Length: 232
Image 1 (cartoon, rainbow, N blue to C red):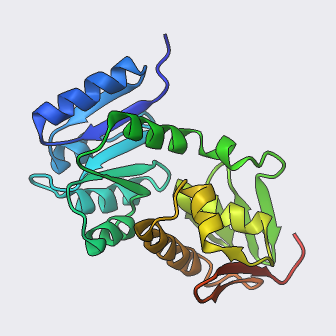
Image 2 (tube, helix red, strand yellow; image 1 turned 90 degrees about the horizontal axis):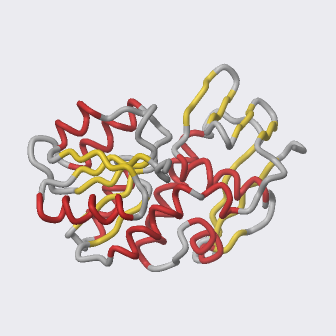
């Protein structure tokens, strides 16, 4: 039977790694295991691995550094951090290094599988099949390919960045409440997810710096509005 997806699991705790791998394989996922960050970077293949589960505390190369290095190779693969840390700064650092989500140890295997499924089915779960390409001013965006072109400057977005940009474009010139965005794209609107949204909004703003027809406005305490000056 064809596996649901090929996952790169990076975890130095061998007992936990084997438990996660065995359970994922029972769920019909193919799993490649790396036990440190250096090994992960050596074996990572963007043509094979569809999702990365990455522990934060790793020998040789830590999870944050590993994620940042993977993002230089591939902007598209979803990265899910496994972390025993609960401090806000550590979670924000994870998002800033290129991670898409995190799950805090100890966690239930059911929760892990649900997080994986959210990423692998993200396009369908957002529920938009009517448009994959957007053009406005000097900017064009293809959600399916995660490609953003501003003038002659081409950028590859992460899946989460692309999902957020698409959701905001589908609701252009409308104030979107924070909890609405979080529930739709993250499936939750707790405090740390709210801080992660701020990180991704900041990343999108950096990507869109040279765009001549859009801005992202912040309504403090309420939400965000993507203002498009030209018609799509």
